[in-house]
Length: 86
Image 1 (tube, rainbow, N blue to C red):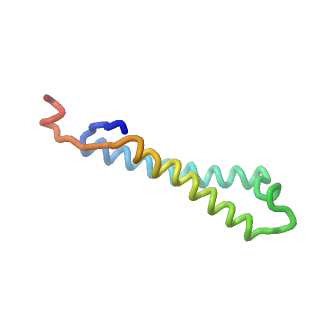
Image 2 (image 1 turned 90 degrees about the vertical axis):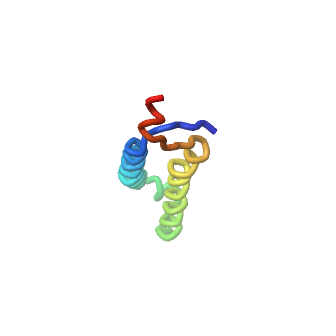
């Protein structure tokens, strides 16, 4: 696991932009796939509940990849300003 040392302000900024990214990017992907007929190709004949379930699984998969996995690969630790100068 790689450790990155940042200040408290930087850590809050990383979390802020990360939340914005996940709130905008994941729904954009879901809208993109639905407009391409992604669900209607896999589930024809109006299996809308299966399609919605597939979306839920897809959403959870992307949330796992983007949200959980990086926390296991990269550890972000905060340091004070005095430690960063030394």
